Amino acid sequence: MSKKQYAVIKELVDHHGNKKRAAIKLGIPIRQLNRRIRQYQEKGKAAFIHGNYGRKPVNCLSTEINNKIVTLYQTKYQDFNFMHFTQFLNEFEGINVYYSTVYQLLSQAEVDSPLKFKRLLVETALRQNIGLSILKLLKPKPSKPLISA
Image (cartoon, rainbow, N blue to C red; front, top):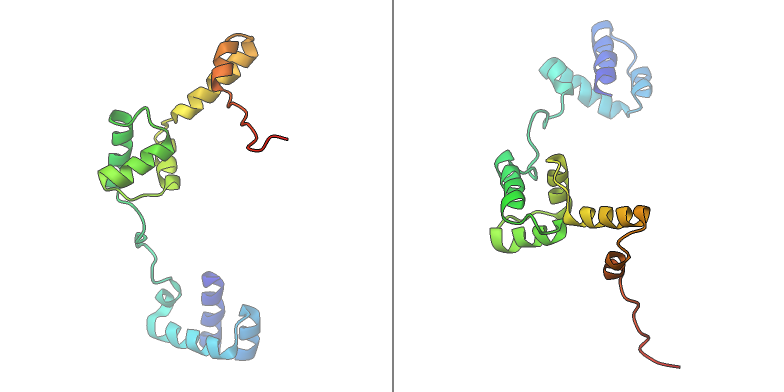
């Protein structure tokens, strides 16, 4: 939208075009168009660049913290699943991050959760028709009803 706005407003200012037609072309009210023309006359093409362009988001973690999270998982907490690891980061390491952030960081570092290996073990046992005792251990036990009929 910014390139289109720039082109239309530049054409309007340079050739003294019709403001109403330009406003319809851009899909904005004439009052907004007047404001954009004033900005163009003051700043030029820079008026059409967003103010936050090139800035790092406030809620973005630094690369130092990202590396620390991956290193902690690979060295100290390698047997934890991602959810448990996130809880330990929040409680004991003082790094307050969400599960989705931890999952994304560890996935980018090509680190797999131990639960993934458990799933692969079950699939392999099913394909090879062996390890039925392992499958029995991994299956959840059915719960008993609280009230008997």
